[in-house]
Length: 310
Ligand SMILES: NC(=O)c1ccc[n+]([C@@H]2O[C@H](COP(=O)([O-])OP(=O)(O)OC[C@H]3O[C@@H](n4cnc5c(N)ncnc54)[C@H](OP(=O)(O)O)[C@@H]3O)[C@@H](O)[C@H]2O)c1
Image 1: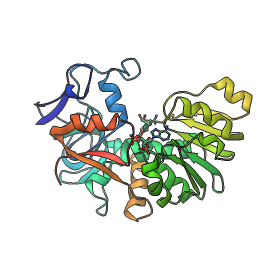
Image 2: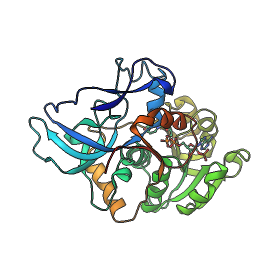
Image 3: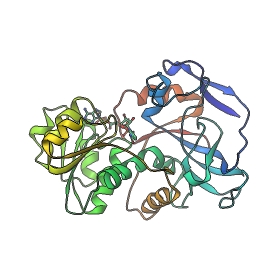
C-alpha cells in the first residue's frame, strides 16, 4: 500500500511517500481502508522529535491516528464490524496510508449524513474538546467558559459543545477568525493579537487552553475561585492554582479513548446538524509534507485533512 513514513526526526521533508506491506488486523483489531485522515498538531511535534520521551516512536514510523474509511477486514475476536461498513475513529499503529488498523473499541459506525472528511475531524479534535469540557472541566449549564484558540480543530468543537450544554462561551481567536468564531454563537470573541485578552474578559468558571505558554500563564487570573483551568498542552502549576483557590489540570483521558460511545455521541450531534465541523485545507496523501508545514504554523481554521478516496 502507499504510505507516508518518517525515517528520521526533522522537518516536513522527512515525510516520505513509499510502498509498504498492508497491515493484517490482529486480535481485537479492524483493518480500515482510509478515505480521509485528520492531520493533528501532535503529529508535527512527534516528527520533529519533540515528544521522544513523552510519546516515543521507533523509526521508521507511520504518523497519524484520526481516520475515516471503510472496513476492509476484521481480526480475531471482532464481531461488531463487518467488511464494507463505513467507520471512523482512532488508528492504533499510524494512519498516513491507504490502510490502517484500529482497535474495535476506538471505532464507531459513520452516520450516512456525516461525510468521510467530516468524520476524520472527530478523533483528536472533537474528542479532546469533549473530555476537556465535561470530564476534566466539569462544565455545567449556566456557567461561563473561556475557550482559547476557538477557530482551531479542537476549539471550534469546544465552543459548540459548551453552547449545547447551556454555557455562556467567551473565546479568543486571531483577526482572520473573529467572524467565524462569532458565527459559532459565542457571547464575546477577543482578538488575541490586539492587546492582553485578560483585560477584556471578566471572571469565568472554566478556561480551556490549547495555546499554552504565556496564554496559560495569563489565564489563571481569569478563573473565579472554585473554578477550573484545563490545559491541553502542559500540566498547570499546582501551587499557583492552590493559592488562587482554583482547580487546574491537564487533559487526562480514561481508556478506552476515544470510546465508541463518545465517538458515536459526537457523530450523532453532527448528523443531526447540532454541531458543525470545519474542514481546513485538504491535501492528497503525497502532499503530507505540505499539510505538516501548514499545521506547524499554528494558525488557521478547522482541521487539515489528507483525502485518499470516497
Ligand atoms: N492534550 C490534548 O488532549 C490535546 C488534544 C488535541 C490537541 N492538543 C494540542 O492543542 C493545540 C491546539 O490544537 P488544534 O488541533 O486545535 O490546533 P489547530 O487546529 O492548529 O488550531 C490552532 C489555533 O490556535 C489559534 N491560536 C494561535 N495562537 C493563538 C493565541 N496566542 N491565542 C489564541 N489562539 C491562538 C489559531 O488561531 P488563528 O489562526 O486565528 O491565529 C488556530 O485557530 C495543539 O498544540 C495540540 O497539540 C492537545
